[in-house]
Length: 353
Image (cartoon, rainbow, N blue to C red; front, side):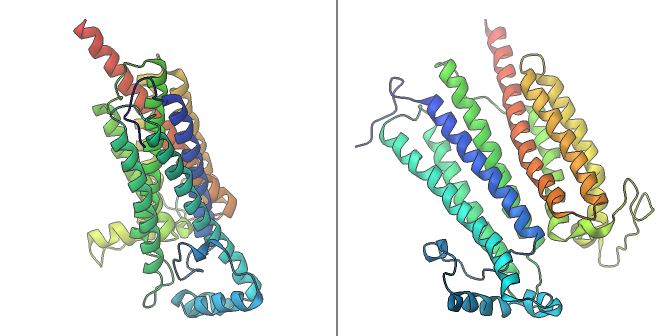
């Protein structure tokens, strides 16, 4: 029997802690997803078996059967086979894709099971059931986008997944991460102030979110097109401030496909994003100094790791750390935007008084 929400049974602090744990899992998934991409492991598993896919191959025959499926893919036929790939090599790339999928299943359980429990106990505060269900749906949608992304690399002569589908998969994960962080903050405020309302997204924070979205989108396209390899120097690109770009195939195709142009845009739009994040951090630093520090720390580290990734010729662990810091930046930005919303609420209450 499910109890209706009641202030006496509501457990906003417990829900906040649960959502923060789920957010931590999502951060780990984003990191492992980055490693999966960087090691060219994403197409090593050619099927999506929700139940039976939990276990990896358990004997030599099963491993050879999985390897045979991969050998039929265009990535293997046109790329991986040229350098020679042994079964041991295949096991390495299989592990990262399998681990990434296992974590995705695990986060689904970590979210869904406590949600059912909180719901049954009537512990979800009034007005938040719909949001928590929306987060569950968003997580499921993100998994679906992941499989559609993999499918895009298994057809025709594709040796990589579609960078559009990759960006959809990654950005949905980051949206979920930001929403988890935001809702957790709402719950913590509610635990301290039972009469409080959900923080609104201010116009200023919305503008910062749009700017940050474009930077994350450019980063996803750079990753999907392997455009990080377009230049290994900084701040110049192959000795030039502005790279040579041809628009023979049209402006929009070049804007969305040319690795040199996208690398260039990702480098320099980053500074627009930095300016916006500094503005956000300054707006909240008086009453929410910790949120301000988190934003500055996250974007500072991300810039340093981005430059180091370029100069290292896309070192695996530096590139993975760069993506990890991107996820942490989303959390920091969401927390600061939430703080900005709280400040707006406070000002409006003061005016009404």
